[in-house]
Length: 558
Image 1 (cartoon, rainbow, N blue to C red):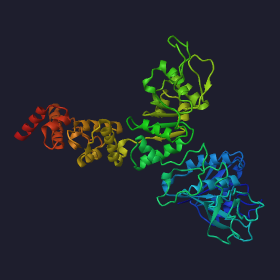
Image 2: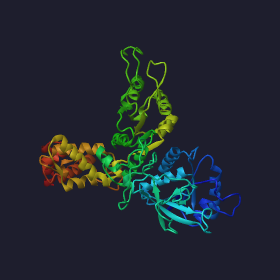
Image 3: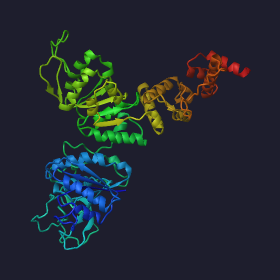
Image 4: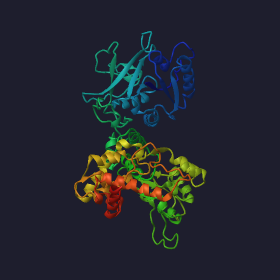
C-alpha cells in the first residue's frame, strides 16, 4: 500500500487565488495515486491543511487523508523540524506492515527537505523520496515526478544543501534541493537521479528507525556517518534484548520490543503492563540500555515492598533532623538517579498520598526531601510497571487519574507466555544455559522435554514459573539429559478452557470416588512420563516410591 507524507505550504491547494493552477500536493496527486495521505502542517499553515483535506476529498475520494500538527513555529529552524518529524514518524510509520512511505521533498522549506534527505541517507527500506518539477520552474506544461536517491560525495568535498536562487552556475535544482554539481549539464529527463548530500556540513543528523526494520536485501548506508550527541545510534534492538535476557521473536514480542525501542530513545515516561512473572523488569532494563542515559544510573524500587511511612523518604530523600532517627542527610531514589533512569515496579501499590508528589516530579522535575523547605530540580527518566488494571484502580479511588494520564504517554504491554508458544523452546534453552553456567555443569533437554514444555498450556504460569520448573528439572536430572519426566506435571494445552473439567454435582456425585479417580489419573500420567519407573514418578509427584509402587500393584491386580 502506497502512503504519502508531505508538508503543506502556502501554495496549497492552488497557486495564487485561482483554482486553475494546482499547488505542489495537487500537482503530485495528478501524477501519482496514494491510498493514504499524511499532511503535516505548522501553526501558520493550518488553514491550508484543512483546505487541502477538503479538496482531496472532493477530487480523490479513494484517498484517506490525515492531518498532523507539527507545532513547528519556525519552519526554517532545522533542529525544530527534525525533532517534530522524528516524533511524528513514530506515530505514522510502522515498518513491519510492509507499506511503502513516500516523502515529498518539493513541498516545504529547505530545512524540511534536508530532514527528508537525512532520513533517506540511512537507506530506510520503508521510505522513498519524490520530487516534482513544476511548470512554475520549467518550460514544460506538465509536472514531472522523479524518485530521489541520496548519495554521499565520493571526492571528500563539502557541498551544502542550497536554496533555490543560488549563484552557483554549476548547480541545478529540483525544488529547493541541490542536485549533481559535478555534471557539466543537468540530465535532461532522468528517470531517477541523485541528490548530493553534504556529509561534512555540521548538524544534519538523521531521524532513524532501527537496523532491524531494514529489508534483508536493503543496502547499508554509505559515505560518512551523520549523527549528533542527542541522537541515539542505530542499534540492533533485537540483539540488545537478547543480551539482556529477553528471548523470542514471535510477532507479539517483536512488536513489544519495537514499541519499547521507540519510547526508549525519547525522554517520556514509560508504563509497562503485564501479568506477574512476564519479565517487566527486564523490559525496563532494555529501555534504559537503549536510551541516551545508558551510561548513567539505573535504580529500582518496588512500591509494594515499601510502607507508606517510608515511601516518601525512599523516593525523595530526607534531611538530617527531619524526624527522630534522621541523623544524616540521605538521598532518595530520585536524587541518586539524577541523569539516569528510575524503575518503579508495582506502581499500582504506591500509597495515594505519595502519588501527588510523584506526579510533580514527572511534570516539573521537582522533588522535595522530607524536612526541606524548598524543592529542587532533578533530571530522572521514570519507567513504571504494574500487573494491576490501573483504570479500575482510578475508578475505585486507589490511583490518581492525572498520574495515570502522565504515565500513559508511552505504554508497552508484555505478553504472557501462553500468547507466545513459539518462543518457549528458545526461552527454555536460554534458561537452561543460565542454570548450566550457574552450576558449572552442562545438561541438555531431550526432544520429549522440549515437546512437553511447548505442549503445556501455561494458562497460569509465565517465564518466572518456567525458570523455576527448569531449575527443578535440572536438579532432578541425574545425568546430562533432562527428560520430560524430570518436570513437575505441566498442564497440556487443550480446548476445554480450564484444562480439567469438573464433574456434574448432581445426586450421583460422590466426593471420595471423585478423589480416587483423580488420584489414579495423576499417578498414571506421572508413571507414563517417567517411562514406567516408580522412583522417577515419585520424584515428579513429590511422594514416596512406596506410594507409586502400591498404585502400580493395585493397577496390575485389576
